[in-house]
Image 1 (tube, rainbow, N blue to C red):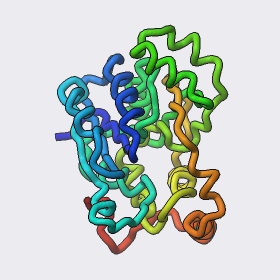
Image 2: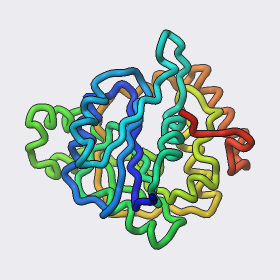
Image 3: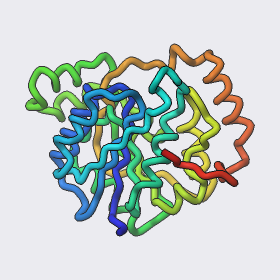
Length: 255
């Protein structure tokens, strides 16, 4: 049965951040009917136990998608693989694409969802900040989340919200372009590729009043910028600029 919104959250060895992301979601007013799907694309850790704490309040389903990491058979996929799996499992008219490290400061799920119910071509984006240095995360850990969040929020630089750290997309628009391109591997360019294809297919960014902060974690992108995997993704991104629909003639979003 269809629901208003599916919140799709990927996590990769970040239970210490996931716990705050889910904590923040549990504080806000949600659309009347919604679901939360958390996809653990790393290894088995505390993520499932954390999700169980919010199973009922967030109508949450936990899915382990990191089978490739078992028995030493490691094939590092981009997070888009997990997002595709979550999208195929979801029931929402609106898909909220997110990640474990997003901390939500207001009723952002409702803010990101409602405009898209009247215009399917919108891509909802938040007003977001980046917790560079980790002082916001430090305050969360020190106080259990009981401090003036908004006072700290304005101390941080803006986050590029045109990448899907936290983005709402109508279900039919995500499926029309074949979701994330599953030929990308490793790290980099998969998010840029998804968003530019949505725009080329007629979608446009819609600025909402949703507010969030991207919690601090080590930024491996910079360390991996010149890796063979990133170079492969960069080349693929430019080679397929004019190909809007991907994953054709194969089943995508498979667990």
